[in-house]
Image 1 (cartoon, rainbow, N blue to C red):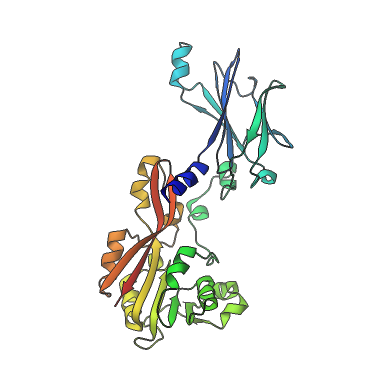
Image 2: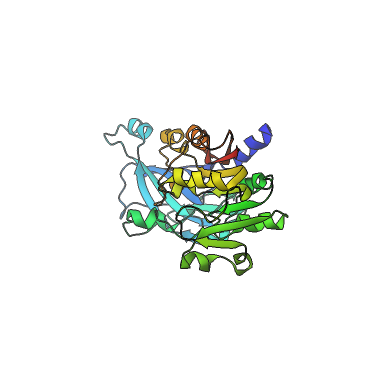
Length: 335
């Protein structure tokens, strides 16, 4: 497993292809292909003028003369010293977005041209996944906070790690805050007795597939919950606690109707300190309706107020540079 994990990490690294072309204006150093779908040509110029300087062009397979989505300067202390310059930012990076026609293609050709002459060519086999929200890369608008950190309809995405643990829950199950019912549907398909409860809002009702609607009840969101004590052997509370203004009141109700086991998932606050050195903040964590933020310890202590045993899991493993972290926390609590 260790070797497999290491291999998976290597697949996600960038590929670099040396060019080392020199001209009177400077040099083209290398082509960089990022698995996120961004391709960069790294170069340096003695004096760069966006309107006057010769600039490289890039071709990928049948896509000719791709236009950069960005062109920017970077600090190059090595160049400053080599050419005895007073300036720091001699580095020029030309950034391209992989064309949609080449996404998912595991083998593509590239050619780099300088003033009409091919100065480098080869094959690239980087496994490219298109970046999410690509319009954020070079849209001309100034984005406001509520355009980005906004909320919307429940997603239909089913987390396989959550499903795996949920399938081990005993007895009748309530999926509280079930969204469009993806987990509910999967549990019922596997033979589990499971029902869902969701907020009674027109937009949510419309988002739920008709095939699942008969297994989902709606309520106003007020307490107490519309169930008797110990109504369910198990309760699932997936991606719900972070949205609730009064989580203690809700958990007291969950504990009242739950006879045995509770499965909880929330975003993991640990991603913030772990990624600080990378200058990265997990986007989903800052979604506009998130009002509670849990780390592993605080989730364990919080659930321990109502349940005698709490076992912690982490889900959504990922890697940023040399930092390994998980996007979500999962807990299995027992009475």
